[in-house]
Length: 112
Image (cartoon, rainbow, N blue to C red; front, side, top):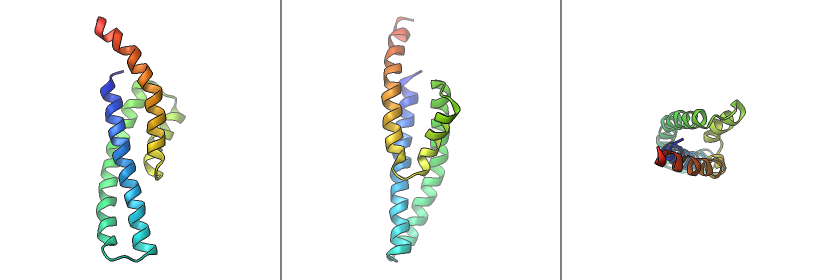
């Protein structure tokens, strides 16, 4: 597995996670605090998160298929982009697990 696959996943996990936290804060500002401007903010961030979550799904599925994960693990990683802050924790765990595998594969690629 190439390091670029893991890097793409990490970037999308952070982007999706940040947008979801912002969306959550926007919803709180809109519905609980009734702040002016929260409606437009929530709409813009919601649209951005929705489209980028689709990209996250594709990238995470690509990573999971190349890492040969079982279905349950693949589903957990895919759903992490829907739970505020979960993407950060799942990304850290996945990265720690796969960085060792990428490092093992790197010398084999260099020799070939």
